[in-house]
Length: 459
Image (cartoon, rainbow, N blue to C red; front, side, top):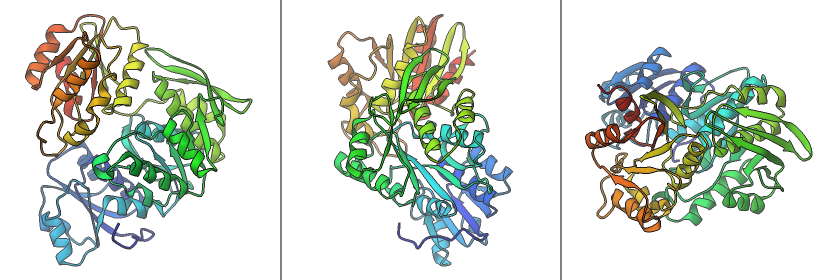
C-alpha cells in the first residue's frame, strides 16, 4: 500500500473502477450501506452492477473520464490497467487513487475486524461465522468473497454491531495490512507462488497476518502448516479432529445431503451440529466458525441451530438441478486439496457414478501445481478435462491441460480420462455419456460454472 490510510468515518463520494467484480462489488455494497455516495463502472453489465444500482449507486457500463464525476476518492480492482481512462482522469485532478486493498483497510478501521484467511475454505468459513454471529444477536457486519444463498449477497454493514467479519485474500499480499483485531486461519498450502516466489515466503506472510492480531487467533490443528504456524507464534486457539485441539471435532459423519458432528471444548460438549452441506471439509469449516465466534463470547446454542439451516454459498458444492436422473453439482474447487475434498464429499452421496469435469485455472497456477493434481481425482469413475481458464493471463509456452492429464495418467494409468478442450465437444460428450444415477460434478474457478445449466436446459 502506498497511500495514507483513508478516513471513512465521514461521508465520502467514492468511485469504483471495475465495480462488477466480486471483490470490488462487495466493497461497494458495504460502502453504500455505510452511507457513502457510490458510483461505479465496468466493461459490461452484470448482476453485481445491478445490485449496486439497487443500493443507490450511479453505475456506468464502459470506461470514460466522465464517469469519475465529482468523486473525492477513486478506487480500482486489480484487474483494471494502470492506463484506464478513469484512473488517468483521477490522477489528472489529483483525486486519491486507491487499490481495492487500501479501500478495504479503511473499512476495517471502522470496526473491530475478524479476518478469515487460508488457502481454501475461507469463503464458506467466513459465511458460517457471519451467520453464527447474526444468530447469536451480535449484529456483525461482514464482507465475504461469495454470495450467501440466504441473502443473495456477501456484504452487509450493521451499525449496531461491534465486529466486522472479512474474508482476507492472500493473493496480492495485502491481507497482512488489514489491521485485523482477530484472525482465523483455515489452512496454508502452495498457491499464488508467482506472487510470493516460494512457499516459504507465502508461509511467512500468513505468520505475519496471524501474529499481527491481538487476538483471538483461531487456527486449524489438522493442517500441518497452519498448526506449525500456531506453535511458532503462540497464543493461538486451535480446532479440528486432533486430540490436542482446543475445540475438538468428534463423531463426524457425512452423506449426500449433509454432515453431522459434535464439538467439544475440552471435555465439555458445545453441542451436536447438523449441517445441510456434505463433506468433512465443511465440518472443519463449521467447527472453525464456531470456535472463532465462541472466542468472541457469542452464545453457543443459537449458533449451532443456525448452522443447521445454513443454505451455503454460491459455487460451493452447489446443487444445480437434475435431468433424466442425472444430478448436477458445481464447485469452485480449483486447487488439488479442494478438488480432493469435493470428490470425497461426492463419494458419500451414493450416486452410481461420479463424472468429474475439471477446468484448470490460470496458466501460472497450472505451471506451479500440475503435478499435485496426480492423485486429486481418485474416487471418480470418469474424469473429463477441458482447457485452462486464463483469468486474464497470457498463455505460457508448454503450459496446458495436458500437464494435468499426464500427471493423472502417470499416477493412475488405468483411470478413465477424457480431454475435451472446446465447450461444444464437451457438451456433446457429456450429453451422450451421462446416464441415470450419475453425478456430474463440475470443478473450477472459471466459466465452467455455466456448463450444468447448458446441459440441464439443452433441447
